[in-house]
Amino acid sequence: MCKAFIFDLDGVITDTAELHFQAWLRMANEEGYYFDRKINEQLRGVSRRTSLSIILAGTKLSEIQTTVLMARKNKYYLEQLESLSEKDILPGIRSLLLELNARGIKVAVASASKNARYVLYQLGLIPLFDAICDGWSVVRSKPEPDIFIYAAGQLRVNTCDCIVMEDAEAGIHAARAAGMQVVGIGPSARVGQADWHFNDTATFDLTTVLENAEPNMM
Ligand code: BG6
Ligand code: MG
Image (cartoon, rainbow, N blue to C red; front, side):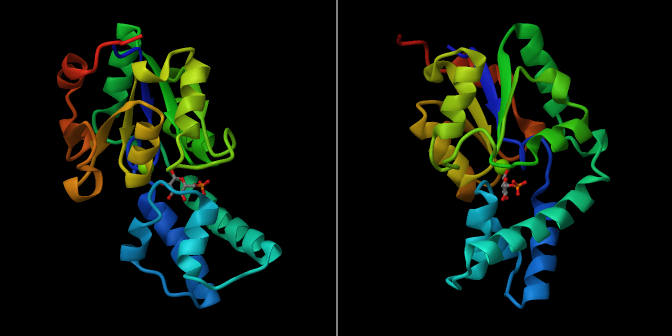
């Protein structure tokens, strides 16, 4: 039975992947590391630190150098977020949140991003969530299940009663490992292993998902 919907943020509620890409690209160009859109796909859903290690492609840096590069990329990313607003909410998401609220289904964000609260603030969506779980909430990032288990705890629901909406392979693995059913948003090559698959948020159909959600076994 679905008692809660847990949303990934980047790529599900708003498409910040391009903004992350531009910020990493600027940093990589300044430092002389090769980076392109194909590599950027590997950064989807994973933490800032893991993203940097993918870009470094085996180059070892000290902890101080790593922290400095992550901070510089985040500064560039925050500059881009200044112009984010309600117009950047992906199609159908605001009405979906309102419908879940009206049905009494709890809603949370479970994002690897340490900027999740700021992004939701810029989008004007904070009041529509019962819990906001972000990159500060747990130590282990997706694909580990920790952020989703933490979100279920914040909502006071069992993990088996949660449905997750994700656009990243790492997020789908994390939700599965947390014992949750998953809606995949995006190309089937990336999210085809989810329980339900929609090409984009505009085509998502809540009725189909709720009708086929697993009954509560507890
Ligand atoms: C995820 C994004 O939501 O957050 C990743 O999909 C990003 O691309 C990660 O690296 C961490 O984000 P931030 O804002 O903490 O650097
Ligand atoms: Mg995502």
